[in-house]
Structure formats: C-alpha cells, structure tokens
Length: 505
Image (cartoon, rainbow, N blue to C red):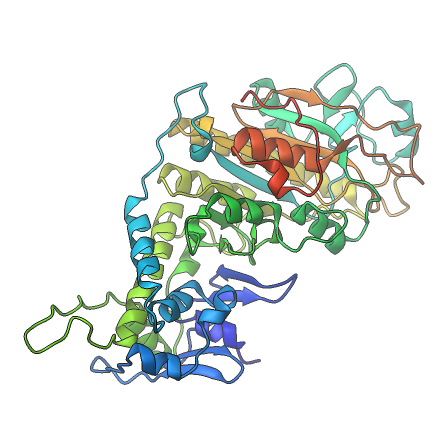
C-alpha cells in the first residue's frame, strides 16, 4: 500500500514523521518503518504539491515570495494539518512578510531554552520544572485483584478460583493488601512513594475498550471533546509559542496517544531511540540520498554584496533544509538523551521507564511523558497473566525511582496510572474476569501522600454486578493539573470537580 500524502511529506524531516487518521489526526515524530520518499516531494493536499526533484548538490530551485504564493500551495490555510516545518515555510514566504517575525521568534525561543535544574529535596521545584509521567495499564486492569479486600467475604464468594488468599496478599492495612506478585509496588508504598485512589471511574460507564479509553484520554464522558486532556494543557500553557515545541510531550508508544494530542500540539512518539535516525538496512539509495540532502546541515546564508540585494529571492530548498535540519537536531537530541539502542521496538515497561529517566537526567524540556503496558484484558487465564503484569509495573517503577534519585531528579517527577476500566466482581467460567467499571489509580513520587485514599466501592451495593465508582477520574486529573502542573484545571477539564488531598504540594 503506498504511503499517504501526509506520510510522504513527513518523510522530509526524519525517518517517518507520521500522521495517523485513527481517532482524528495524530501527527507525531514517529519512525514507524516507512522510508523517506524517493526525491524530495511534499504532497500537502489534494492537487496542491510542491515538487523539489533530487538533482544532486548543485540543485537550486529559487522562488520569490510572490511566485511561491502564486503557485497556490495554500499552506498558510492548512497550518493545523501539515508538518510544522512546512507550515513555517509557507508563513515565512507569505507575500506581506508578516511571519518573518514569527520565524525569528521561533529561533529565539529555541536559543532561550534552558536545562531545568534538579529540585531541592522536599521542595518539588516550581510548577514549570515538574514532570508528569502517565502510565497506561491498557486492557482494563482488575482492581480487586490488585488492591485486594482481604477481609471481605463477598470478594472470596464471588471469586472462588481467582481470589488472592488473605495470607498471601502483601498487607497494606487491616482491610487491604497488594497482589503478592507486586513486591515492587509494596516497596514503593513502604518507602512513602505510592498512593492508591480507590474506586475511580465516571458516570454511566462504557465497557468498550475504544470508547472508554477515549473517555479517559479526553477527560470527557459525554464524548463532546476531541482533544486529549494533556494536549489541552500544552495548547494553553504554551500560547506564546507557535508552533509548540513537540519535545514538551514524549510518548513511548507506536502512535501518539489521544491523551497528549491538542488542537495545536502533538507529542514526539517512538518506541525505540534507534527509530529516530536513518535505518542503514534500507536499500533504496535514492531515498537515502534525498533524505541526506534535505536533512544535512544547510549552508550558511550568503552575505549581501554590491551585486546582490538584501531582499533577494529566498531559495526554497535552502529554507526547507534549514527547517528540516532544525527538526533533525531535535530528534537527535531526544535519541541521544534516551540512549542509543536503549530499547528495541519490543522492549518492556522497565526499558521504557529507563529511557524516560535518561531523558529527564539529560535535561530535555519535556513536561509530560507517556508509557503504556498492554495485556490487562484478562477474559481468560487471568491467574497466569495479571500477576506477571503487576510485577512488571512494580519492578519498572522501582527501578525508575532509583534512577531518578541517583540523578537528583526524583522530587520533580510524579507518576500517574490509569486503565480504561476495571473488571466485573464475579469471575467467569474461563478463569478470567469480564469488562467492568471502577478500579484504583496509582500516584507515585516523593510529592505523593502515601497510603490509601478515597472510599473503596461496596461489594454489597453493585450496579448489575459491577462496582459503583466512588471517585471521578476527572477529580484526579484536575488535582494533578492544578496542584502539580500549575494549570487552571477549569479551563482544561469539562465540568467542575473537587481537588483531592493526595499531594504534598
């Protein structure tokens, strides 16, 4: 299947700046395995193309601004739907020159970017120094077998096969214990780094993976919102930057999660640092030459002389090369920070959290990281699957916070987990549990008020066999956005929700 126009245009910047149509437009710095195009061809919209044939080092296709606009690429009107460097190209070449200041401001903002300093112990840094790591437990984690109600007979009656024996559970309080395969989580709890919020959900819960995930990612159970709650944070906190620096959000996933997609922002997305560079195994020499031509360091602009005018026509290829080189420098910075070869495309949660710790230590300006662990949809054979997943979560987070502590960054970082739903109270005949509703959320970090928060759902008062939620997930989001990220949650989260007493800030 041929690459889509947006994918072909995106290949001009790095190995695969991809835009996915699923759940709306999801552009990302994503090295998804597609080679750059043969020749330098930017296919922007139906019938609107600019073609820069690869003719070697001597290529020089110059346009005046008037000629460029007369060619009606129409890029200025499509800034939200084309890669950032192409939209900046169109703006810089606009006939009234009004975006020259925009381009100058873009370059100045890059120069002003400073490496955030480690927060002093116990002070957690200022809100603009803090980092949020969102951990998705994809598939619907069974909350009852994660935070086990060890003194509730109804739990053991409903799960004669799957119930965690009270004697094996890792005791948290007299009433609750952790799954015995999660000693890493228990260690975080004992060290005062783990908070658990009971019974998180939302009204009229949806049991579809796709719909419920979208609800959690947009923060809107009414499904009237089409941007992610973190994406809206970037849209609002970075109003002075156009375009918003994509490095402010990094997702270690195969496609940009809706959580982090705003109307003006899309995160950098990859699963392996090696994907952020040309892959040498590709045999198409023409594609590689074209990629190197555009992404190589551009020549310095010629100084005006007695024979040239300061307003001489801008060489379009040189401008594109400067923009592409700038983008390539961005991804090189991320790749080097994450650690070359640190994790392959099939790497597990701990490897991805290690990359996050590396990027934090390297001083990237990233405010939100996103990682995901799949496999929690345990309709059958849950006893042999969920415990291992919980062990991965515990071991991954344990190693993550040790790495942060070693580099003096732990006070700047908060981890928040979510899953699209929990599981039904009663086990099924296949040794598993089916889609349910409410489930616990984890908060981890030195700023967390460790312990159990909220009210655990009653196993006596069920909704057609499902737990009734006791904490709205939007209250958790609003608390994190306001208390940790320093944002006005009322502008970002539809509705009004209480702030929870779960953080020490």
